[in-house]
Amino acid sequence: MEFSSASMPALRLHQCHAERACSVFASFRMPAAHSKQFLTIPWPRSTFARTAPPSRGAQSRTGASALQLHIEDSPVKAALRAYLTRRAVVTAIALGRNRMRLRLLLLAAVSCLGAVPHAFADPIAISRGTVALASPFSGLDPPFGFELFGNDTAIAVETFAQGTPAVGAGTRVDLSTTVTPSQFLNHPLRETVNGAQFDVFLSGGLNFNATPFIVPATISGSFTTLFTMSGVLSGFSDRDRAGLPLFTANLAGHGTASLVSLRDTGGGSFLVGSTVFTFSPAPVSPTPEPRTLVMLVGGLACVAFLFRRRAVARM
Image (cartoon, rainbow, N blue to C red; front, side, top):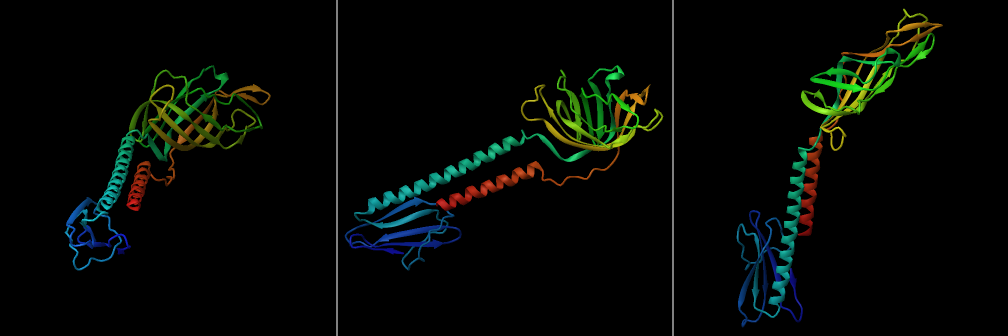
């Protein structure tokens, strides 16, 4: 590639490729009275200028990682040297800043890995346990405690939820309810989730969806129906439930719901002592969902690719 004008000498740029190395030579044709000088500027190995093939007189050095300028002494030498030096310095500074930003981003991401709470995407199947919610007529005052069991899991909960107080013969009854952990505990509870133990204050809720049924005419009839349960519980290290939870677990299960400790008050009315949900073993279909760590690593790889692409574009 040649540049020429009436007031400037001709400039010829050549490129040489040799084993991932690059050397670019520029030369001026000046009167013989001027002496030859060389100017070398650092240049990244991966940068290749789009120039013409090397001429017969061009020289190359294998493994070079610098921009070599063969400049004959001329009035424009100082201006050309200043321009090329400034461009090389600006490019080097930009590359250094991008690399530093990428290093800081990776360091921050690695530091955050330890702060990422335990998240269990697949529901934990509750196969054993009983939730007994006493009614106001039972003479028992909340909170009521219960424990749920699954595969390497034991969840202890205290709640202020209460059961159905009374029912009438021939009426349709729905025992569906939501049980939330007590927010007034002064001490943490020991929880085991997928084999890991935590001393935490719980937050969240368990949703019991029961099949409605018709109350029998006599107390000797069946007061039992089926239910399914789903919910999310999170464990916090402090009572105020502030900051990130130590774990978040999805729970699922099913079983039978019953009204117990009934008392016939006459006229087809029955007082209820407690509403009891008893869990039964059953497999729960896992939910296909990417793991948190895989998503984080994929995001970091994408960011690194974008930084590298931007650096090459600037060069």
